[in-house]
Length: 610
Image (tube, rainbow, N blue to C red; front, side, top):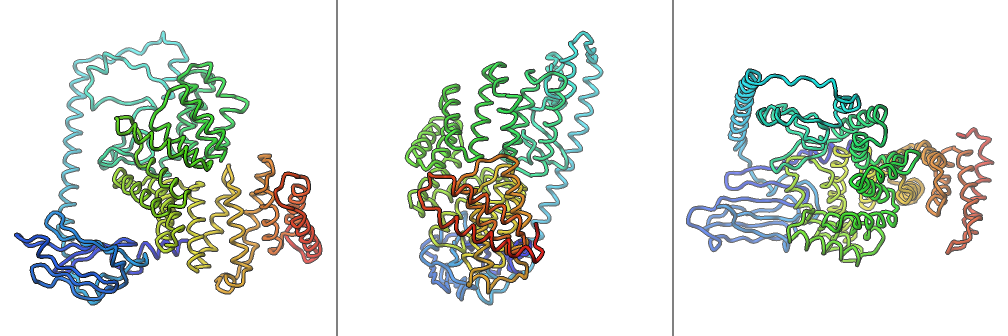
């Protein structure tokens, strides 16, 4: 919730870093980093440290640096110290993850120490940046003048086919003039091809190849949802115009289609991908006729789409077909490993990840962080939660280094995975922190996405476990609203959310501590949207959907939606009575549904919501 976000970001008035006359420290949600300058000529033998759960002492060369009580508690056995770059560095692990008002009770901070130096350095950097940009513009102008003086502008060819000129105009294909490119200075090349790197010089900001966000010092591109949506709109326009003028089977149109689907897959526009590849236009067949290079991309895109639609077996078969077309690679093995994991085939998943790591060690291109995450999920599936958390922390460290200074959704995925392992270990405060970080990340990088909806649900689960029922209820409500609008619905998550809301509103323990006067009427619109989407998309009713009909009806009937609830209950009865493959006896479920229908019909006289 917004209140929770403000509380954590402002850390309750707590400092995130401070300096005293003898030492300095920085704190994160679950640890402190304490630094003390080591006098010249001294080493580890002159350092004397004693860390207890509630206090610590630290002396260097007989001089007392710290002696006092903590503002909280630490796990003394997990705390360590070392000497790094002339400083004694002490890492203190908090017993319960939270923000502390300070490190040692009664410590006195030096006001403003270091701030002026940092401000001065920042001003100098800004001045240097402005100076370099001005010099670059002058140089660029001089070079352009020289080029224009020595080179005639090439005449436009009016003999070129109309289709080629149209494709150039919409920026999908490019017919470069080689002689002009060789003579023109590198800085003056204007990149008109949509595949080229998007470079925007505004105050030194450089966008990466995809155009999704700025790049960091390593050249890795971050993600900002507003940029991503703009790029999607750009490719949508290019695809529409190219298809209209050149036809669907033209290479320029196919290129625009795959660039557009690259945006769709990240934004979870899965029904659009499905309709384009397998619908009336049948881009799969068109791509196959157009050549192997397009068909390979079509198979890969459909594999990703099926994976995000929870159709993992189909996705796996497509990945194997992709392997037959292009051969093995570390990247492909990672994707296959994640798919085996989703199917519960942990041994095959582990084999894929380990083979991919072996290929990386031999120079193949791949993603070490993704492989560490995959192996961490394998360990979690086998019940090794500590081993899982250890690998996932390594993945987070790897990605934090790769995307230092920029936002990327993979960081949010790491936090979410770590939270799940810590949750299994019973470390709920730490899990809550990582779920919060994943929600914060996904809102900025993905916006209204299933990643965001699921992360909010996990944060709600953690809040509920910790007894923060009002926060949990608001988060569950928000998650349900998001899930009701996704084009591919996660019915298991939806069912879990509704179960949790029922307990919060009607469970004896949760209800007494719930700080809201609103009842279940606040969920009627979300439940209605989910039911309407099931019908509109003609989704085949299965166990999860039938259970949703029943418990969703239970929730909204108490809010006054008598007619809608009764209709959903009839749909549930139709499934329970008509299916003979149940491993459990459904007669009790049918009876409960019929009893609820009677309640709804008897209550309709009171003027419920239809």
